Length: 213
Image 1 (tube, rainbow, N blue to C red):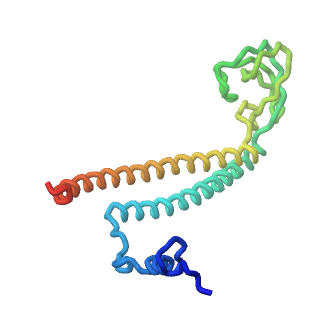
Image 2 (cartoon, helix red, strand yellow; image 1 turned 30 degrees about the vertical axis):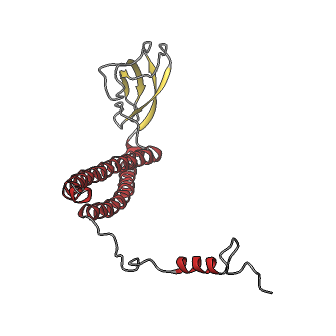
């Protein structure tokens, strides 16, 4: 049975009002299909191009940092090989009490504590060596010497070469990343200034037309 409320315009009328609402919702907005894409500004193209270039440079930087670390590690290991045969660790006996050293260069005789030791070739030595921390006279300390028995820095080992290479690669990555960030920020700031000037210029032209003044 047909409801007596159907089609008479009263509340609950789903015939006329519902159909009308659906028709309005389904009706396409005039000109919506003809709207084209928003035109790109020149600064938009500059920002997009600079972003792509900086991304490529970031990848190059990452690869360069890794290759640099690998190369430095190889150089360190190549240096460690001959040093392992040329340098020897011997025991030195302090002739006098050791105080805090002024210089930390093991090959420097300008400061340090007088000590005696026997070199790899059996020769006796009496020179100043660097001792970390106070030590009484007569105590023994290990030192590194070359083939002639002269004090020298410790040889480079695998751990030292690896750490030095990793730190160098990381430093290169951080510095390069900061440079790329500054360049990116500078480009965006410059584009923002250009856009602001362009907006101000266009507003001065079209604002009177829009406001009717």
